[in-house]
Length: 498
Image (cartoon, rainbow, N blue to C red; front, side):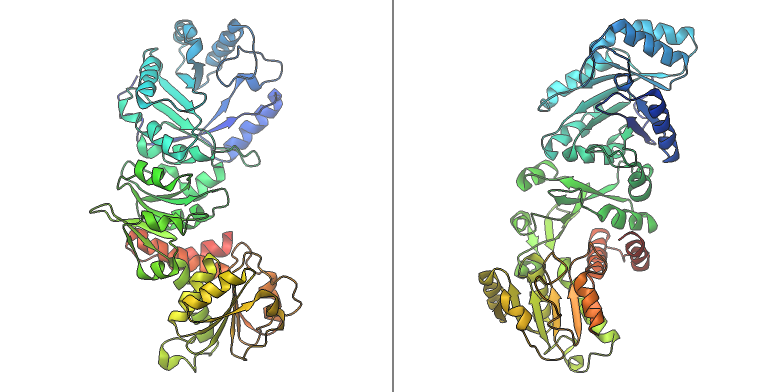
């Protein structure tokens, strides 16, 4: 067994070949070849997944059977040159025999003693006792697997690593446990488990994501952590947009999705400077204001925060809204590019004095309303909830109209139409009510929505949500790093991946 530092310079990526049904040896072999093609360092083959093999049933096992059968299989693994042989803690009585078998065959394989904790993760003291018990077996490596009910429980796992005298594999399964994999290298973990393409496992990032987005071999103990606070997190495209630019400018940071159930508990649990900033997603953009020590005036007026940085000196959380400037500057630049700045040039913005027709008064709509108002635009707001439209119109000194009137609305020729609803089209309309000048669509999951296609056909200037998404990410990058974002590099990512 090596010193506590010998294994902390690199991370090994392990692809578990696991299923809830037995599979053939041929299928396992195919999965192993796939894992190799996807650049996994090692694969984990569970004996209880092999057709017609019946080891004893312990924690997480699928079958019951003769314990001698398991020992014989592990001895065979030693003879065949397996790099790692895992034995569950409850079966540790077989270790002396297995170690002797290793010695007789001059095997260099490492023995892992593992424990799977069902239910609620126990208190820290109990986990430390469990680690001590596993270390007492004189295993080469120990492994602890839990199932976190809340992301705040993961801190218990991270705090185990300094106490281990042998390499520790420790993680929590499920979406709430994702950061236990992605940040394992930072805290001293030995393996990171990833899923094969086409066989997703909840809580495990895919191998292609690890290679393309995260590059965990670059993560160190002093790496700064930036996270998406959201619920759910499976939709997030942030890792592929933020992590490669970090590496591109040699910035020591990693961006990870964080499934958060309770904001208060989350911030109480992760107060350290290593957690340096956050992007705020659904459903927390309004609620999170009360957890910020300071809020930028624009975000305060909008009533929503989508980006938080933690001040290094005193740890205060400062909230910003990058949606607003991202959307408004995208619209302004498109107007300027098409020579539509005559009326507003003297006022500093091509939106000045221009009618701004806004569809949707939710989070994105509020940001667009305050942003366009700050540029001197005149607002007319439509929303399916007329009271919400009236409330927003009152806040920006605009006008509210019933949503059903949108199809008949006849604005002036130079007006702007901005869609801030999630549908990417205007329901029950056969024409674009504002097609003479510019149409903006905040939807970014499709590069060209139906609304934008119809606006193009009508001869309007069009601006898509992907451009807004890119610009807000650039703003977030600048806030996170206090450096200039590599804009063209990030644009290339967006154009190729979104």
